[in-house]
Image (tube, rainbow, N blue to C red; front, side):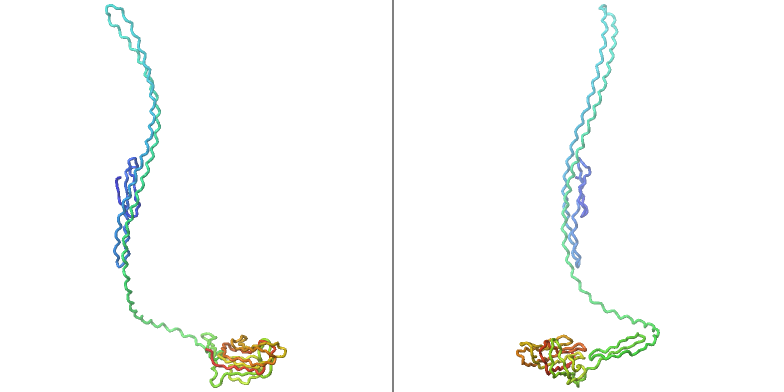
Amino acid sequence: MRYTSTADPGVPAQVIDTTGGPNHVLDFVIPRGATGLAGATGATGEAGATGATGTAGATGATGDPGPIGPTGEAGATGATGATGATGATGATGDPGPTGPTGATGEVGATGAVGATGATGETGPIGPTGETGATGAVGATGATGEAGPTGATGETGATGADGATGATGETGETGPTGPTGEAATITIGTVTTGDPGTDAEVTNSGTPENAIFDFVIPRGEPGGGAPEVLATVDTAPQQTAVNSPLVFTDNPLISGAAISHTAGSSSVQINLPGIYQVIFHGTISVNTGTPIPSSLQVSLNLDGVPVTGASARHSFSSTDEVATMSFDLPIRVTNTVANLEVIADQDGFTFEDVALTVIRLGDAS
């Protein structure tokens, strides 16, 4: 190990082999632990404490040296050259007085040096040993603990509403427009409406040439005379299935809210409001009508039965005579509305029937 240096928080730890082996020299770069987060700004909150510096990662193990390659084979030794032949010895002189020394015989020629043996081939270079495994990177130091969050400051009080600004000055009056063409007004239709309805004025022309149509409601009936209708029929009349009774005479008609044509079955209501309806009649059984039997009469308003405005009688003998009647207030909203008294069966005879209708007032 040569150097150990500290890096910024968040940078990966490093182990750097500066030599590459077989004698490894490792430099370490170890990051600092991250600084704890500052507390959220409160009133102001206290700054978070700095996190502790993380511990250095452990040093990675040194890789094993690669194996040494095998030694190459030695080349073959060259053959030794042949020894040269020995020269011939000179003949020995006769003994006598010692004569002069005879001449030395010539030295035999030196044998030729044997040829140098061929150099043996160089053995192959052994394979390079494998590079040792790189040591494991040291574990990253633990992150320092985050500093505690500062306390949240209290919410400040809402400021008072600002004073209302002064009213701006009134702008200058614009220039007068050009004089328009003279308009015309014409009275159109004048219609009488029902009492209690709103008066209306409608322009059926143009803004320059107006045509005013008027709807003027009738006044309510005067308080002196009541709105009443009484209609009767004293003669016998046979009933039919779901058929109306006929009224032949109108002994009393007061006002215009209720009307009836003598000899018809329908009474007209000409003004919305609350009405009292009273009916009575005498009923007998016709010869041949099966006994026991029953009959019902009902009040219809515009063809619809009025709830509660009905009467029913069951007959147990052929000579039985009964009186049938109903009396109740009703609400009328349509104009013109029609009232009728309906019998639901045939085989009976009505006599002295009477229908009285009285207007009580406006519907609320």
